[in-house]
Length: 502
Image (cartoon, rainbow, N blue to C red; front, side):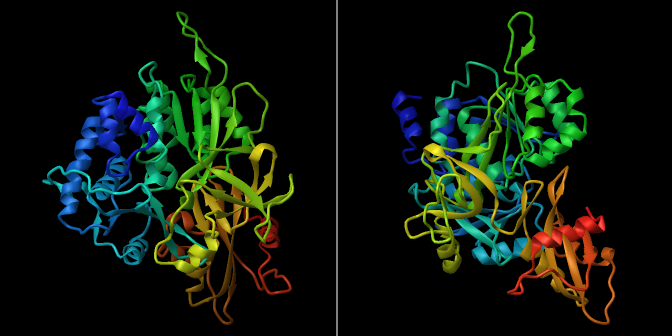
Protein backbone atom coordinates (compact mmCIF):
# COMPACT_ATOMS: atom_id res chain seq x y z
CA UNK A 1 0.00 0.00 0.00
CA UNK A 2 1.39 3.42 -1.00
CA UNK A 3 2.25 5.81 1.82
CA UNK A 4 -0.26 8.31 0.45
CA UNK A 5 -3.09 5.77 0.70
CA UNK A 6 -2.03 4.93 4.24
CA UNK A 7 -2.01 8.62 5.16
CA UNK A 8 -5.52 9.04 3.71
CA UNK A 9 -6.72 6.16 5.86
CA UNK A 10 -5.17 7.73 8.96
CA UNK A 11 -6.96 10.98 8.17
CA UNK A 12 -10.18 9.07 7.57
CA UNK A 13 -10.58 10.38 4.01
CA UNK A 14 -13.78 8.88 2.55
CA UNK A 15 -13.64 6.06 5.09
CA UNK A 16 -17.10 4.58 5.59
CA UNK A 17 -18.53 1.45 7.09
CA UNK A 18 -18.99 0.09 3.56
CA UNK A 19 -15.36 0.67 2.56
CA UNK A 20 -13.75 -0.24 5.89
CA UNK A 21 -12.66 -3.79 5.11
CA UNK A 22 -11.42 -3.13 1.59
CA UNK A 23 -9.31 -0.24 2.93
CA UNK A 24 -7.92 -2.38 5.76
CA UNK A 25 -7.12 -5.16 3.28
CA UNK A 26 -4.71 -2.80 1.54
CA UNK A 27 -2.81 -2.46 4.83
CA UNK A 28 -3.01 -5.98 6.27
CA UNK A 29 -3.57 -8.19 3.20
CA UNK A 30 -3.70 -11.88 4.09
CA UNK A 31 -2.93 -11.36 7.77
CA UNK A 32 -5.34 -13.14 10.15
CA UNK A 33 -8.35 -11.07 11.20
CA UNK A 34 -10.58 -13.33 13.27
CA UNK A 35 -10.99 -16.87 14.51
CA UNK A 36 -14.21 -17.94 16.20
CA UNK A 37 -14.57 -20.69 18.76
CA UNK A 38 -15.93 -24.07 17.69
CA UNK A 39 -15.29 -26.24 14.65
CA UNK A 40 -17.89 -24.32 12.63
CA UNK A 41 -16.50 -20.91 13.56
CA UNK A 42 -15.28 -18.42 10.98
CA UNK A 43 -11.55 -18.12 10.30
CA UNK A 44 -10.85 -15.14 8.10
CA UNK A 45 -7.98 -13.05 6.86
CA UNK A 46 -8.48 -9.38 6.01
CA UNK A 47 -8.61 -10.25 2.32
CA UNK A 48 -11.24 -12.94 2.86
CA UNK A 49 -13.36 -10.64 5.02
CA UNK A 50 -13.26 -7.87 2.43
CA UNK A 51 -14.28 -10.30 -0.29
CA UNK A 52 -17.17 -11.66 1.78
CA UNK A 53 -18.47 -8.18 2.59
CA UNK A 54 -18.34 -7.21 -1.10
CA UNK A 55 -20.25 -10.35 -2.19
CA UNK A 56 -22.87 -10.04 0.50
CA UNK A 57 -23.27 -6.41 -0.48
CA UNK A 58 -24.09 -7.51 -4.02
CA UNK A 59 -26.85 -9.80 -2.78
CA UNK A 60 -28.28 -7.09 -0.50
CA UNK A 61 -28.16 -4.43 -3.20
CA UNK A 62 -30.44 -6.55 -5.39
CA UNK A 63 -33.12 -6.36 -2.66
CA UNK A 64 -33.04 -2.70 -1.58
CA UNK A 65 -32.92 0.86 -2.81
CA UNK A 66 -30.37 3.39 -1.46
CA UNK A 67 -31.22 4.56 2.05
CA UNK A 68 -33.30 1.49 2.95
CA UNK A 69 -32.85 0.08 6.42
CA UNK A 70 -31.51 -3.48 6.59
CA UNK A 71 -32.12 -5.32 9.86
CA UNK A 72 -29.27 -7.71 10.69
CA UNK A 73 -30.71 -10.42 12.95
CA UNK A 74 -27.95 -12.99 12.49
CA UNK A 75 -26.52 -15.09 15.35
CA UNK A 76 -23.77 -13.57 17.46
CA UNK A 77 -20.48 -13.69 15.61
CA UNK A 78 -18.10 -11.81 13.33
CA UNK A 79 -20.44 -12.26 10.37
CA UNK A 80 -22.68 -9.68 12.02
CA UNK A 81 -19.99 -7.01 11.60
CA UNK A 82 -19.41 -7.98 7.97
CA UNK A 83 -23.16 -7.99 7.26
CA UNK A 84 -23.42 -4.44 8.60
CA UNK A 85 -20.51 -3.43 6.37
CA UNK A 86 -22.19 -5.19 3.43
CA UNK A 87 -25.51 -3.42 4.01
CA UNK A 88 -23.68 -0.10 4.07
CA UNK A 89 -21.65 -0.98 0.97
CA UNK A 90 -24.91 -1.72 -0.84
CA UNK A 91 -26.24 1.75 -0.02
CA UNK A 92 -28.42 0.69 2.89
CA UNK A 93 -28.49 1.60 6.57
CA UNK A 94 -27.53 -1.33 8.81
CA UNK A 95 -29.74 -2.11 11.81
CA UNK A 96 -28.06 -4.81 13.95
CA UNK A 97 -30.17 -6.44 16.64
CA UNK A 98 -29.14 -8.39 19.69
CA UNK A 99 -29.67 -12.15 19.13
CA UNK A 100 -30.98 -12.34 22.71
CA UNK A 101 -34.00 -10.25 21.71
CA UNK A 102 -37.31 -12.07 21.52
CA UNK A 103 -39.20 -12.24 18.24
CA UNK A 104 -41.65 -9.53 19.30
CA UNK A 105 -38.76 -7.20 20.20
CA UNK A 106 -37.16 -7.79 16.81
CA UNK A 107 -40.54 -7.18 15.19
CA UNK A 108 -40.68 -3.79 16.91
CA UNK A 109 -37.25 -2.86 15.53
CA UNK A 110 -38.26 -3.97 12.04
CA UNK A 111 -41.45 -1.90 12.17
CA UNK A 112 -39.92 1.15 13.85
CA UNK A 113 -36.97 1.30 11.44
CA UNK A 114 -39.28 0.65 8.46
CA UNK A 115 -36.79 -1.96 7.30
CA UNK A 116 -36.86 -3.13 3.70
CA UNK A 117 -35.39 -6.54 4.49
CA UNK A 118 -34.29 -8.67 7.44
CA UNK A 119 -31.14 -10.78 7.14
CA UNK A 120 -31.15 -13.69 9.59
CA UNK A 121 -28.54 -15.97 8.00
CA UNK A 122 -25.63 -15.43 5.63
CA UNK A 123 -26.94 -18.35 3.55
CA UNK A 124 -29.66 -15.97 2.34
CA UNK A 125 -26.95 -14.01 0.51
CA UNK A 126 -25.17 -16.91 -1.21
CA UNK A 127 -24.50 -16.27 -4.87
CA UNK A 128 -24.08 -12.53 -4.60
CA UNK A 129 -21.54 -10.90 -6.91
CA UNK A 130 -18.99 -8.53 -5.40
CA UNK A 131 -19.80 -4.85 -5.93
CA UNK A 132 -18.07 -1.53 -5.45
CA UNK A 133 -19.25 0.50 -2.49
CA UNK A 134 -22.08 2.95 -3.06
CA UNK A 135 -20.72 6.44 -2.38
CA UNK A 136 -21.46 7.84 1.07
CA UNK A 137 -20.25 10.87 2.99
CA UNK A 138 -18.68 10.42 6.45
CA UNK A 139 -21.55 12.33 8.06
CA UNK A 140 -24.29 10.25 6.41
CA UNK A 141 -26.17 7.85 8.70
CA UNK A 142 -24.50 4.43 8.49
CA UNK A 143 -26.48 2.43 11.03
CA UNK A 144 -29.26 2.44 13.59
CA UNK A 145 -28.29 0.89 16.92
CA UNK A 146 -31.36 0.34 19.06
CA UNK A 147 -31.44 1.12 22.75
CA UNK A 148 -34.24 1.41 25.26
CA UNK A 149 -35.34 4.87 26.35
CA UNK A 150 -37.27 6.28 29.27
CA UNK A 151 -40.53 5.33 27.57
CA UNK A 152 -39.40 1.70 27.64
CA UNK A 153 -39.64 1.30 23.88
CA UNK A 154 -36.35 0.72 22.02
CA UNK A 155 -35.19 3.74 20.02
CA UNK A 156 -32.85 3.69 17.02
CA UNK A 157 -29.79 5.88 17.50
CA UNK A 158 -28.68 7.24 14.11
CA UNK A 159 -24.91 6.76 13.97
CA UNK A 160 -22.86 8.17 11.12
CA UNK A 161 -19.93 6.60 9.31
CA UNK A 162 -17.69 9.04 11.14
CA UNK A 163 -19.12 7.86 14.47
CA UNK A 164 -18.61 4.16 13.73
CA UNK A 165 -15.33 4.04 11.80
CA UNK A 166 -13.96 7.59 11.72
CA UNK A 167 -11.41 6.89 14.44
CA UNK A 168 -10.39 3.51 13.03
CA UNK A 169 -8.01 4.81 10.38
CA UNK A 170 -5.50 5.93 12.98
CA UNK A 171 -5.14 2.31 14.04
CA UNK A 172 -2.98 1.52 10.99
CA UNK A 173 -0.15 3.42 12.73
CA UNK A 174 0.03 0.67 15.37
CA UNK A 175 3.17 -1.47 14.79
CA UNK A 176 1.20 -4.71 14.49
CA UNK A 177 4.02 -6.65 12.84
CA UNK A 178 6.67 -5.88 15.45
CA UNK A 179 5.29 -8.25 18.08
CA UNK A 180 2.71 -10.99 18.42
CA UNK A 181 -0.69 -9.89 19.70
CA UNK A 182 -4.06 -11.58 19.94
CA UNK A 183 -7.23 -10.46 21.69
CA UNK A 184 -9.75 -12.84 23.24
CA UNK A 185 -13.26 -11.50 23.71
CA UNK A 186 -16.79 -12.66 24.39
CA UNK A 187 -18.47 -9.27 23.92
CA UNK A 188 -21.87 -9.41 22.16
CA UNK A 189 -21.27 -8.10 18.64
CA UNK A 190 -24.63 -6.32 18.20
CA UNK A 191 -23.90 -4.27 21.33
CA UNK A 192 -22.18 -0.99 20.42
CA UNK A 193 -19.28 -1.78 22.78
CA UNK A 194 -18.63 -5.14 21.13
CA UNK A 195 -19.10 -3.78 17.62
CA UNK A 196 -16.76 -0.81 18.07
CA UNK A 197 -14.18 -3.00 19.79
CA UNK A 198 -14.01 -5.34 16.78
CA UNK A 199 -13.70 -2.37 14.41
CA UNK A 200 -10.80 -0.96 16.42
CA UNK A 201 -9.03 -4.32 16.71
CA UNK A 202 -9.30 -4.78 12.94
CA UNK A 203 -7.79 -1.35 12.34
CA UNK A 204 -4.94 -2.01 14.77
CA UNK A 205 -4.09 -5.25 13.01
CA UNK A 206 -4.69 -7.28 16.19
CA UNK A 207 -6.35 -10.64 15.40
CA UNK A 208 -9.32 -11.61 17.53
CA UNK A 209 -10.36 -14.95 18.96
CA UNK A 210 -14.12 -14.49 19.33
CA UNK A 211 -16.19 -16.48 21.80
CA UNK A 212 -19.65 -16.51 20.27
CA UNK A 213 -21.14 -17.64 23.56
CA UNK A 214 -19.21 -16.58 26.62
CA UNK A 215 -18.34 -19.21 29.20
CA UNK A 216 -15.74 -18.41 31.86
CA UNK A 217 -13.90 -21.75 31.60
CA UNK A 218 -13.73 -21.45 27.80
CA UNK A 219 -12.41 -17.90 28.07
CA UNK A 220 -9.72 -18.89 30.56
CA UNK A 221 -8.75 -21.89 28.41
CA UNK A 222 -8.42 -19.64 25.36
CA UNK A 223 -6.21 -17.12 27.15
CA UNK A 224 -4.00 -19.80 28.67
CA UNK A 225 -3.64 -22.06 25.64
CA UNK A 226 -3.36 -19.36 22.97
CA UNK A 227 -1.12 -17.08 25.05
CA UNK A 228 -3.40 -14.17 24.26
CA UNK A 229 -2.06 -10.69 25.03
CA UNK A 230 -5.41 -8.88 25.36
CA UNK A 231 -8.77 -9.75 26.90
CA UNK A 232 -11.86 -7.59 26.41
CA UNK A 233 -15.09 -8.14 28.32
CA UNK A 234 -17.72 -6.67 30.61
CA UNK A 235 -17.41 -6.69 34.42
CA UNK A 236 -19.79 -9.65 34.72
CA UNK A 237 -17.38 -11.73 32.61
CA UNK A 238 -14.50 -10.84 34.91
CA UNK A 239 -16.58 -11.83 37.95
CA UNK A 240 -17.44 -15.17 36.38
CA UNK A 241 -13.81 -15.85 35.43
CA UNK A 242 -12.73 -15.04 38.99
CA UNK A 243 -15.30 -17.51 40.33
CA UNK A 244 -14.13 -20.11 37.79
CA UNK A 245 -10.61 -20.09 39.23
CA UNK A 246 -8.77 -17.43 37.24
CA UNK A 247 -6.13 -17.21 39.97
CA UNK A 248 -5.19 -20.87 39.40
CA UNK A 249 -4.51 -20.28 35.70
CA UNK A 250 -1.46 -18.99 33.87
CA UNK A 251 -2.72 -15.71 32.44
CA UNK A 252 0.68 -14.01 32.42
CA UNK A 253 0.61 -13.57 28.63
CA UNK A 254 -1.98 -10.81 29.03
CA UNK A 255 -0.55 -7.31 28.67
CA UNK A 256 -3.88 -5.49 28.57
CA UNK A 257 -7.21 -6.18 30.23
CA UNK A 258 -10.09 -4.07 28.93
CA UNK A 259 -13.65 -3.64 30.06
CA UNK A 260 -16.70 -1.74 28.88
CA UNK A 261 -20.51 -1.43 28.95
CA UNK A 262 -20.62 -1.13 32.75
CA UNK A 263 -18.61 0.26 35.66
CA UNK A 264 -15.70 -1.98 36.60
CA UNK A 265 -15.10 -2.53 40.36
CA UNK A 266 -11.62 -1.33 41.31
CA UNK A 267 -10.61 -4.39 43.36
CA UNK A 268 -11.69 -6.78 40.62
CA UNK A 269 -9.64 -4.84 38.07
CA UNK A 270 -6.58 -4.93 40.35
CA UNK A 271 -6.97 -8.70 40.80
CA UNK A 272 -6.75 -9.28 37.07
CA UNK A 273 -3.92 -6.78 36.67
CA UNK A 274 -1.84 -8.96 38.96
CA UNK A 275 -2.67 -12.07 36.91
CA UNK A 276 -1.25 -10.48 33.76
CA UNK A 277 2.23 -9.08 33.24
CA UNK A 278 4.04 -6.08 31.78
CA UNK A 279 6.64 -8.08 29.90
CA UNK A 280 8.38 -11.43 29.51
CA UNK A 281 12.11 -11.49 30.06
CA UNK A 282 14.07 -12.77 27.06
CA UNK A 283 15.91 -16.09 27.21
CA UNK A 284 14.46 -17.15 30.59
CA UNK A 285 10.81 -16.57 29.64
CA UNK A 286 9.84 -15.18 33.06
CA UNK A 287 6.90 -12.74 33.18
CA UNK A 288 7.35 -9.60 35.27
CA UNK A 289 5.21 -6.71 36.44
CA UNK A 290 1.47 -6.25 36.04
CA UNK A 291 -0.80 -5.79 33.05
CA UNK A 292 -2.55 -2.54 32.28
CA UNK A 293 -6.31 -2.28 32.84
CA UNK A 294 -8.49 0.02 30.75
CA UNK A 295 -12.15 0.66 31.57
CA UNK A 296 -14.07 2.36 28.78
CA UNK A 297 -16.96 4.78 29.16
CA UNK A 298 -19.54 5.22 26.43
CA UNK A 299 -23.07 4.50 25.28
CA UNK A 300 -24.99 3.73 22.11
CA UNK A 301 -25.87 7.37 21.50
CA UNK A 302 -22.16 8.25 21.55
CA UNK A 303 -21.16 5.62 19.01
CA UNK A 304 -19.35 3.52 21.62
CA UNK A 305 -16.50 4.56 23.88
CA UNK A 306 -15.65 8.22 24.34
CA UNK A 307 -13.40 8.11 27.41
CA UNK A 308 -11.05 5.75 29.23
CA UNK A 309 -10.33 5.14 32.89
CA UNK A 310 -6.79 3.78 33.02
CA UNK A 311 -5.12 1.68 35.70
CA UNK A 312 -1.38 1.68 34.89
CA UNK A 313 0.72 -1.27 36.08
CA UNK A 314 2.08 -1.14 39.65
CA UNK A 315 0.64 2.32 40.43
CA UNK A 316 -1.89 2.68 43.27
CA UNK A 317 -4.47 4.77 41.40
CA UNK A 318 -8.19 4.10 41.31
CA UNK A 319 -8.76 4.97 37.66
CA UNK A 320 -11.90 6.91 38.59
CA UNK A 321 -11.03 9.88 36.37
CA UNK A 322 -12.15 9.48 32.76
CA UNK A 323 -9.78 10.68 30.02
CA UNK A 324 -11.63 11.74 26.84
CA UNK A 325 -10.60 10.08 23.58
CA UNK A 326 -9.28 12.30 20.75
CA UNK A 327 -11.98 14.53 19.29
CA UNK A 328 -14.34 14.29 22.27
CA UNK A 329 -15.14 16.96 24.85
CA UNK A 330 -16.85 16.39 28.19
CA UNK A 331 -18.31 18.81 30.68
CA UNK A 332 -20.45 18.61 33.80
CA UNK A 333 -23.56 20.78 33.99
CA UNK A 334 -26.47 21.51 36.30
CA UNK A 335 -30.16 21.06 35.47
CA UNK A 336 -30.11 24.35 33.54
CA UNK A 337 -27.15 23.28 31.40
CA UNK A 338 -24.65 25.58 33.15
CA UNK A 339 -21.16 24.27 34.03
CA UNK A 340 -20.84 23.30 37.68
CA UNK A 341 -17.98 24.23 39.99
CA UNK A 342 -14.98 21.94 40.33
CA UNK A 343 -15.71 18.90 42.48
CA UNK A 344 -19.46 19.40 42.19
CA UNK A 345 -21.71 16.61 40.93
CA UNK A 346 -23.80 17.31 37.83
CA UNK A 347 -24.87 15.67 34.60
CA UNK A 348 -22.19 14.63 32.14
CA UNK A 349 -22.64 15.97 28.61
CA UNK A 350 -20.44 14.95 25.67
CA UNK A 351 -19.64 16.42 22.27
CA UNK A 352 -17.62 14.79 19.50
CA UNK A 353 -17.59 12.75 16.28
CA UNK A 354 -19.46 9.79 17.77
CA UNK A 355 -22.54 11.67 18.93
CA UNK A 356 -25.65 10.36 17.21
CA UNK A 357 -27.54 12.39 14.62
CA UNK A 358 -30.73 11.70 16.57
CA UNK A 359 -33.29 8.98 17.27
CA UNK A 360 -34.86 7.58 14.13
CA UNK A 361 -38.36 9.00 13.69
CA UNK A 362 -38.45 10.54 17.18
CA UNK A 363 -37.91 14.28 17.08
CA UNK A 364 -39.13 14.84 20.63
CA UNK A 365 -36.76 12.29 22.13
CA UNK A 366 -33.92 13.70 20.02
CA UNK A 367 -34.53 17.23 21.29
CA UNK A 368 -34.48 15.93 24.87
CA UNK A 369 -31.16 14.13 24.35
CA UNK A 370 -29.26 16.69 22.26
CA UNK A 371 -28.69 20.37 22.91
CA UNK A 372 -29.01 22.91 20.12
CA UNK A 373 -25.21 23.16 19.88
CA UNK A 374 -24.62 19.40 19.65
CA UNK A 375 -23.94 18.25 23.22
CA UNK A 376 -25.34 14.85 24.21
CA UNK A 377 -27.04 14.68 27.59
CA UNK A 378 -25.84 11.31 28.89
CA UNK A 379 -28.06 11.05 31.96
CA UNK A 380 -24.96 10.03 33.95
CA UNK A 381 -23.62 11.88 36.96
CA UNK A 382 -20.04 13.12 37.20
CA UNK A 383 -17.73 15.49 39.11
CA UNK A 384 -15.69 18.07 37.25
CA UNK A 385 -11.95 17.76 37.80
CA UNK A 386 -8.95 19.71 36.55
CA UNK A 387 -7.76 19.87 32.91
CA UNK A 388 -11.18 19.06 31.48
CA UNK A 389 -11.30 15.63 33.12
CA UNK A 390 -14.31 14.19 34.91
CA UNK A 391 -14.89 11.60 37.60
CA UNK A 392 -17.93 9.41 37.01
CA UNK A 393 -20.31 9.37 39.96
CA UNK A 394 -23.17 7.07 39.08
CA UNK A 395 -26.23 7.05 36.84
CA UNK A 396 -28.96 9.64 36.68
CA UNK A 397 -31.23 7.56 34.48
CA UNK A 398 -33.23 4.75 35.99
CA UNK A 399 -31.25 2.00 34.33
CA UNK A 400 -30.02 -1.34 35.62
CA UNK A 401 -26.68 -2.64 34.27
CA UNK A 402 -27.06 -6.40 34.10
CA UNK A 403 -24.08 -8.32 32.71
CA UNK A 404 -23.17 -5.47 30.36
CA UNK A 405 -26.74 -4.96 29.11
CA UNK A 406 -28.95 -2.00 29.97
CA UNK A 407 -32.29 -2.86 31.57
CA UNK A 408 -34.67 0.08 31.74
CA UNK A 409 -36.96 -0.27 34.74
CA UNK A 410 -39.95 1.32 33.03
CA UNK A 411 -39.92 -1.33 30.29
CA UNK A 412 -40.00 -4.16 32.83
CA UNK A 413 -42.65 -2.34 34.87
CA UNK A 414 -44.84 -2.00 31.77
CA UNK A 415 -44.57 -5.73 31.04
CA UNK A 416 -45.44 -6.71 34.61
CA UNK A 417 -48.31 -4.22 34.64
CA UNK A 418 -49.95 -6.06 31.76
CA UNK A 419 -50.67 -9.02 34.05
CA UNK A 420 -54.36 -8.92 35.02
CA UNK A 421 -53.54 -9.44 38.71
CA UNK A 422 -50.98 -6.60 38.93
CA UNK A 423 -52.11 -3.16 40.03
CA UNK A 424 -48.63 -1.57 40.05
CA UNK A 425 -45.02 -2.65 39.77
CA UNK A 426 -41.78 -0.89 40.62
CA UNK A 427 -38.44 -2.27 39.43
CA UNK A 428 -34.98 -1.55 40.84
CA UNK A 429 -31.52 -3.05 40.50
CA UNK A 430 -29.76 -4.83 43.33
CA UNK A 431 -25.99 -5.52 43.46
CA UNK A 432 -24.94 -8.94 42.21
CA UNK A 433 -21.42 -10.37 42.41
CA UNK A 434 -21.60 -12.02 38.98
CA UNK A 435 -23.79 -9.71 36.90
CA UNK A 436 -23.15 -6.33 38.48
CA UNK A 437 -26.84 -5.72 39.08
CA UNK A 438 -30.01 -7.78 38.74
CA UNK A 439 -33.56 -6.47 38.25
CA UNK A 440 -36.05 -7.10 41.07
CA UNK A 441 -39.67 -6.02 41.33
CA UNK A 442 -42.03 -4.86 44.09
CA UNK A 443 -45.64 -5.53 43.12
CA UNK A 444 -49.04 -4.44 44.40
CA UNK A 445 -51.79 -6.90 43.47
CA UNK A 446 -55.27 -5.94 42.44
CA UNK A 447 -57.87 -6.47 45.12
CA UNK A 448 -59.25 -9.99 45.10
CA UNK A 449 -56.40 -11.40 42.97
CA UNK A 450 -53.68 -13.84 43.94
CA UNK A 451 -50.37 -14.50 42.22
CA UNK A 452 -47.15 -16.33 43.00
CA UNK A 453 -43.63 -15.11 42.44
CA UNK A 454 -42.99 -18.01 40.02
CA UNK A 455 -46.15 -17.20 38.10
CA UNK A 456 -45.21 -13.55 37.56
CA UNK A 457 -41.63 -14.40 36.63
CA UNK A 458 -42.93 -16.87 34.05
CA UNK A 459 -45.24 -14.14 32.67
CA UNK A 460 -42.29 -11.77 32.31
CA UNK A 461 -40.11 -14.47 30.77
CA UNK A 462 -42.61 -14.83 27.92
CA UNK A 463 -42.51 -11.11 27.15
CA UNK A 464 -39.00 -9.91 27.87
CA UNK A 465 -35.44 -10.87 27.05
CA UNK A 466 -34.02 -13.10 29.76
CA UNK A 467 -31.68 -10.43 31.16
CA UNK A 468 -34.68 -8.13 31.77
CA UNK A 469 -36.72 -10.66 33.75
CA UNK A 470 -36.87 -9.86 37.51
CA UNK A 471 -34.82 -12.26 39.59
CA UNK A 472 -36.98 -11.62 42.66
CA UNK A 473 -40.56 -10.44 43.21
CA UNK A 474 -41.71 -8.90 46.48
CA UNK A 475 -45.47 -8.52 46.97
CA UNK A 476 -46.28 -5.37 48.97
CA UNK A 477 -49.41 -3.50 50.08
CA UNK A 478 -47.90 -0.09 49.24
CA UNK A 479 -44.82 1.51 47.75
CA UNK A 480 -42.70 4.24 49.38
CA UNK A 481 -43.53 7.56 47.69
CA UNK A 482 -42.53 11.20 47.60
CA UNK A 483 -44.89 14.10 48.14
CA UNK A 484 -45.58 14.17 44.43
CA UNK A 485 -46.51 10.47 44.43
CA UNK A 486 -43.32 9.24 42.79
CA UNK A 487 -41.91 5.93 43.98
CA UNK A 488 -38.84 6.37 46.18
CA UNK A 489 -36.65 3.68 44.67
CA UNK A 490 -33.80 4.16 47.11
CA UNK A 491 -36.22 3.34 49.92
CA UNK A 492 -37.64 0.45 47.92
CA UNK A 493 -34.20 -1.17 47.69
CA UNK A 494 -34.05 -1.17 51.50
CA UNK A 495 -37.24 -3.22 51.59
CA UNK A 496 -35.59 -5.92 49.48
CA UNK A 497 -32.59 -5.97 51.81
CA UNK A 498 -34.81 -6.20 54.86
CA UNK A 499 -36.81 -8.99 53.21
CA UNK A 500 -33.66 -10.94 52.49
CA UNK A 501 -34.40 -10.89 48.75
CA UNK A 502 -30.87 -10.12 47.67
